[in-house]
Image 1 (spheres, rainbow, N blue to C red):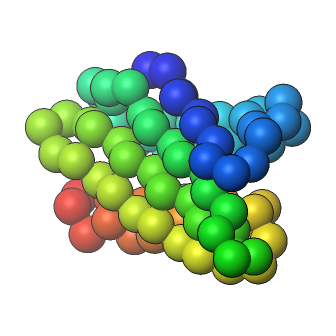
Image 2 (spheres, helix red, strand yellow; image 1 turned 180 degrees about the vertical axis):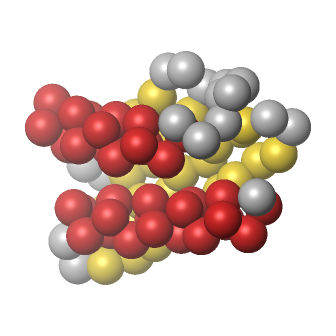
Length: 89
């Protein structure tokens, strides 16, 4: 499993990259086979948008969240992914 973190209109700092990887690693422990995870961090009109796509065990989990703070967007999008996993299981 690798996490690809990309930034649009924002420079992805090592702290942001580490935070995303740490949060996503907790979520993906529930699957045996996890593909390459894609995380896109964007800033548009003052809004911080985070999109995460997780291909795991034959399903594709995707979530997007928008707030005024990048870290809270990451937290909320990971919660959405956790709810999708719970629904799937």
